[in-house]
Amino acid sequence: MENKIDNKTASRRGFIKNIAASVAAAGALVPMGLSAKDDPALIEEPEWGKKLGDPVDKNLYGMPSPYEHNVVRRVHKLLSSGDMYASVAMCPVQDLSGIITPNGLFFHRS
Image (cartoon, rainbow, N blue to C red; front, top):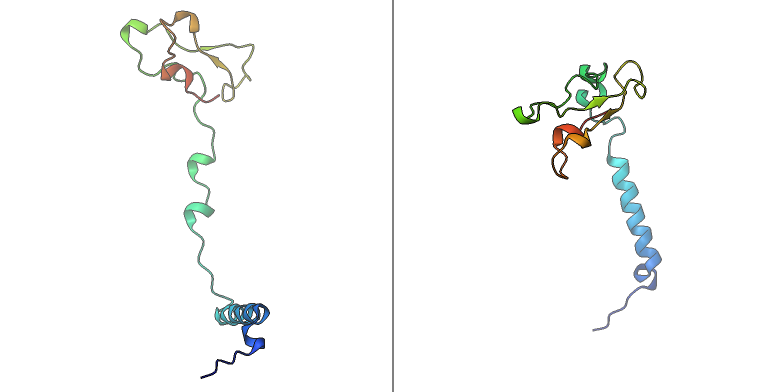
């Protein structure tokens, strides 16, 4: 029994041409007008994204301990933008006991 292999069909070029033809044929079978509808959660702007949030000085700490009620963020008028929506608030490092800064003092947007 002889195995005769045609060089044309066994070559790499022939293999790649066959794959390319198969991919092109599969692409032609897909309808051109078929498209998924857009997700309204991605397309429509949510109401909370259309307005500014709370001013920086609204919550100076959150719920501090009764023993630490004087330890709040300080807002400096010289460094603020004037409207308090984009401003600078500083942590009162001098009032802290130890080296750990509480979450309510350093984690805020400005």
